[in-house]
Structure formats: C-alpha cells, structure tokens
Length: 591
Image 1 (tube, helix red, strand yellow):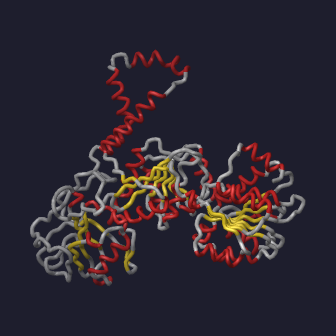
Image 2 (cartoon, rainbow, N blue to C red):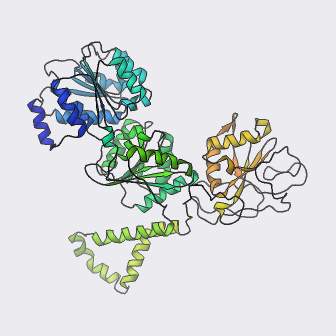
Image 3 (cartoon, rainbow, N blue to C red):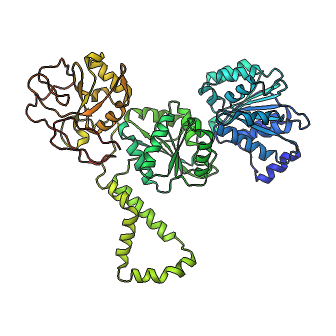
C-alpha cells in the first residue's frame, strides 16, 4: 500500500482491520479483480474498497478513473468524507460527490474540474450524463456500494444504464449486505469472473445486543412506543418505520408531546436532513424517526437503542437496523413492537441472528413513573453546580428554604420536574396482551378494552358497499382481525359496525383519511338507539327502514328506548371520551 495511505491510517488510529477488510484489501491491492463483498452495514466496507481505490488511482491523470455508486445522499457524503480522510496526504487527489436535493449547477462545475474519483447516487449521475457534463469513457473502477439497497429502491435500470456507459471499465467491485437474485443478476450481466468474499454470516450476530420484543395490538403501537421512550430516560437511538409517511407522522406526534425527536426520510430536502443529523450527532435529539433507506447514511457509534416501530418485511433488514447499536465493543438494546400475529416473524429473525429474543412486558404507568423518578434523583446526585453559582446564590437559597423540611423540599422538586409524567400515567391502561389476543372478548363486560363500540360510517349500498366489502375495506386499511368486526348493518346511504372498544380510536383515525369509490369517508362513534319508523337521523339505526345485513354474534335485541354507550375509564392520547347523554354520534377528539 502506498506510503501516504499507511500514514493516514496511522493518523486515524486504525490498528486492527475488520473481517471484510482483512479479506478484501490484500486481494485488491495485489491483484485487482472483479469481486463481490458481502457484509452488513457498519462493518468497514468503505475502507475495504476505498483504500485499494486510492492505492491504484493515478494522481497525474486528469479524468475520472473511479466511480462509487451509493443509494442515498447521506451515504454519498459519508463516503466522500472517509475517502478524503484516507487520502489526506495524497497531493493532487480530487474527490467529488454528486447527489440530488441540491443545485446541479455547482456539481457540474465540480465534475468539470476532472476529479479522479466520483461518488454518486444513480439518479444524479444520469442527470449529469444526459447534460453531457461528465464523461465515463476512461473509467477503470466501478464500485456498487449497498447494491441490494439500490436495487430495492428501484435503481436497477439506472445502474444498468450507467454500467453500459463505462466501456473502458476494467473492474467492478460490488458490495452488499445480502446476495439477492437481483444482485446476482447484475453481477452475471456486468461482471467478469468474480471472487466472492462473505463475512455476512459472522456479522449478523452481535452478542452485545439485547433483542427484546413487546406484544401489543396494532392500534396501541404508538402508545407502546411512548412507554418505551419514557421508560428509557437516557435513550439515544433510532426509531425505524416502514414508510416515509409513518416516519413523519410518528415524529410529529412525539414532538407535539414534548419529545426531542425528528424525522429523517427521503422526502426532506438535503438542507433539512443535514440539520437533523447535526442535531442528532450533537445529542440535541434523543432519537430520530427514520426509514431504512435514510438511516443508511447514519454513522454514530454511541446509539443505545434501536426501536422497530414495525418489523421490516425482510428479516435480513432487521440485522441492518439492530447493527446500528452496540458498535465499537459497546452494548445496546434492540426493541421491536409486534402484534400477536407477528410472533412467527420474531422466530424467523431469531434463527437468522442465532440469538434468543426476550419477550418483555410493556411497562405499566407505575413502572414508568418510578423509573423517571429514580433517573431524576440520579441526575440530582451527580450534578456538580458551578462554584460561582454556589457563591452567588447559596445564601438566598438557604433563606428561601430555611423553614421547609428536607423531605418536603425533595418531594416538591420531583413533583415540579415530573408532574406531566405522573399525570399522564396516573390511570394508564395495561397494554400487554397474550399471543392469542384474548382481550377481544367483545361485549362481555369489564373494562372498555373488552367492550364493543358501535361505529357509524357514511357509505352504504349506493356506494357499492356490502357486508363483505365493508369488512374488506376496514381490514385493508387498519390492522384489525376480520373476526373483531361485528354486528354489521349496511343501509342505503350509511352503515354501522362494532369493533373492540380499545380499537375504536385507531379505526376512526385511520379510516377517516380514506376514500371509498371516490367518496370521502367519515367515521364516528354512534349512539345505539331505535327511531321506530322512517327517517331517523344518521346518528341512530332505523328499526325497519334499512336494508341492513348483520354478521357475527346474534344481536342483543333492538335495544329500544335510550341507547347504551360504553364510556372510557382509561386515558387515551386526547383525554377520556365524552359520555354525555346526547344521542347524536360523538365526534372523536384528535390527539
């Protein structure tokens, strides 16, 4: 390896190579051939290909010799930064990163300065090619970094177009966390006979990670997340969601409740994403809510927790997520919030990572408050006030509290600091359920979570609705068992159905955002009453005027007279439900 690189590695304090570096670097330094390197995120792949690239680059030649393709802007910037660190002693080295989300004008100027290495996202590179702002005719080395993720993001055609535009390419180095059929297809089409270096199996299991899972109904997922955050006061972590919209929605709800979090996803412009990462790295944020793609550019070693707000579809993606914690020999916790039907997914992931997951109870209100109190007391005991502060205010403080008992002062101090937490969890419900979801004992008394709630929806037969289509519409848009939807009545212009009480808010919030056959859906809780003739308001059900169909268990009579309501005895996000005697539908409070 050239002396400038050896010196830079020494300056950076690197001593022991990672397994993928140990396998790949000697091969690429002595005999650069086409290779496939399989290793998880965070295992040092950038140095594995970056050091050989820098070793072979000709600083005297003024055209693009090496291209690194990566899926995201953040990863592009990270790769450029690392390569510049390794090449800090190489005079005349010029590395440019090009990616979307920023003005292309400045990037055109950068690439026309003839850098030896370009790091690019596929979309922006094609923009530059189409504008004839860049030439890849003399390119010798192409690196596909995070190839599986680029293909998952739909960049297959872009990658093929770029590789077709590199006629002088001598070697292709493909790095990926997984060897999917699509990845292998790219290799077969555009690579010569290659060698495969795999350390993925050795890296999926990190014994320093405590894998925990919490079983909750889907409609209690957000409240479970809040509990986990409150139960880990010193959390510094990443909350993973499946979609960009989920990342935005979850973070907005948490921010409104006072949590120091921020979203990170592809719909945010580059300036905002950079700002979020700066705040996160400086610990101004306790967590970021991110999609898998956006998190690929995160390089932080001190993350204490990874929380899967939803499990990924691909079990191997779980290893990417969990690998964000317990880095550099430290320990970490990976928490997953799952519904009962996802227990099989947990077992599948256990087999993949070769570790037993721990089923953990969702903390109840008393446990959360107790944890917060002890955390606050620990902060007080470890606090070291500035000496000037003590000198200036010690006498005033002593005089103010001279007649207050020490224990009383401590109680007041804790109450002032934790009053909102104590209030929020004073009557908190138990969110834990068994694997079989036995809480769905509809209409059998007990707490509201076990009772059935009647819902009104403003669509009916004229909208093409039927009993089966109503069930299908609800279950396709809300994670709820079809068997939990009961006592369905489909009328000409509106319909009614029952759901478990602890699911009603979740159903209303999710379906109210949807459309059915072009008609905007309105959903409200309905008063069950009889109107005894034609023409009742939409808030009640007509005794004989509709063409409704019922499903499930037998109705308990017509419930003539005043209708019965099931009032909530537990706190929800927006407070307890209105239980007045008004016989109109009760409009939900938004949280």
